[in-house]
Image 1 (tube, protein in one colour):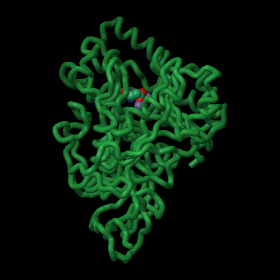
Image 2 (cartoon, protein in one colour):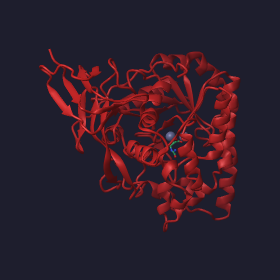
Image 3 (tube, protein in one colour):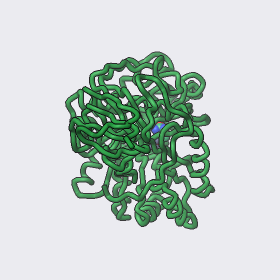
Image 4 (cartoon, protein in one colour):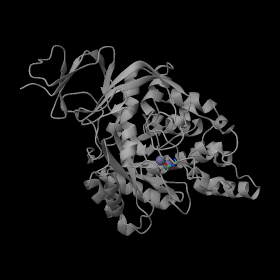
Length: 462
Ligand code: URP
Ligand code: ZN
Ligand code: ZN
């Protein structure tokens, strides 16, 4: 009996180690790493000489097939996970939305139906809670039992998703009891709403006003409030899509006090800025997402933050086509569906700017895009590392290959790229999910429906 596959000669990279070794795979899992593994009867030998072999990327913030702003995000679980695979992401955690009056379970069932038979790679769900009367609090425990061990709450979007502080506090308490993580969209929605109405009354309707009506102070205030509410409830908190230095400072202060406060940022905040709105006509709508783009100087602060206090890079992939979808807001920026596409290029952008840019080493890169996401969200050590017993979700990464990002070549189902024209150095060459090669040399070899739902375990304070 031999192995199914040996990946040979590669440089294995985990969050802690870098070493040249072979990786042996059988039955979809990694069974051994080492030099001179026996090759008799091994069905497939893949040569990774000169390349990194790293754990598959884990994107813990995506919105596939999500109704929002009068339309639905343009990638579904088939097109979105396929694009993710091209970029080296082999697991994603999407958001199941509980609408007002619904049971949390209904959100989970609805999103399970959206994903099954479509997903190309493995997936899990956070549950967005929009309505939590006391009678529903026990449902948090039930959902955790189903493997949905994290919940997203909003301090923004009044009338749609926003929760009051009392409900947020109660959710923190209930989640902490179950070992669940609360993910927070931290922006002061009430204040922003006032600024938005004033801007519209002054005739400011262009896309850039989406950004100009959502100050960094609104994000910093909500971040500090989320942290305070979590501290009072003795709960961990995970701040999603952190976009600016002001909010980062709040996270840093809390972490310096030893609080279980975690935060992610996204490639758009590392690469794009308010300057992207200096484009003709309605083009700026391509950059309308929330929190918005910031002044350029924040980018360096976020790159520096990724050395320590920012622990994850996710994408907040929420694509809407420019034609017909973004155009819903032609005359009024508040009607532009919020969100941008990014699921495909996270690894390349973070490697290129982070390791290539001298901000951190390749181990920290793996930690940011795979290992810490797995640890914080109850997937480790099945996912997020290269070790015997882990799923064989692996990426052979060519750290020298250059690629110019463009909508003409990407695989996401959306008619523009936020990163159009940006050249990255570092691209996946082969992507494997549970031992199956799903992408090799830019060719898709996977199959819709092969992706499995992942029941996650509660947060363990990683
Ligand atoms: O603009 C964004 N980020 N759209 C997706 C929803 C969210 O707030 O994450
Ligand atoms: Zn959000
Ligand atoms: Zn989001």
